Length: 206
Ligand SMILES: [Zn+2]
Image (cartoon, rainbow, N blue to C red; front, side):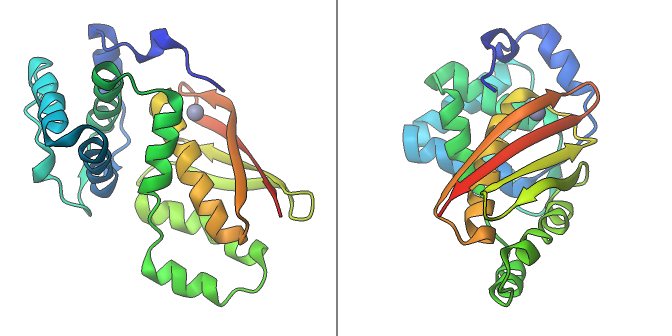
């Protein structure tokens, strides 16, 4: 699913809408945004984003972020949309950010190492999600390892399409790790921020 441009413009209405979202986001994802900005646009780029935040009425600075603390989803969405506005980021940039942000916890790494079957590793995905997110329930349907296909359902997750592009990248790296395969494609096939229901088609080749 490609994102429509009009959804991605920072308007008063958008800010009103995203301010009502009750879905705290974990700090390490915000910190990953900062790393991506610095890597691609330098410290100066990060300053530009913070200045834009200020103009919108947010006193927000990336260096104050703590990895394990939670922040409002509106800040996270704005962080991505401001980047798009300033640096002309495309959907692929958000996917790349997601891939780079996917950090598998040490504990999970150790656990997964002992699983011979990818399906067992995969069964840890909902647990992994709960560990890093206060909202949203992840479940898996239509799983077929040999055919290289499954659908990941995310329910009760209210956010913004820009975050779904990010998640496509995030899930891509998670799946590479969990399935022990190199080529993975993740594409969102259903997206409804009103109901909070999303479906991601995951395909892989050996
Ligand atoms: Zn979505």
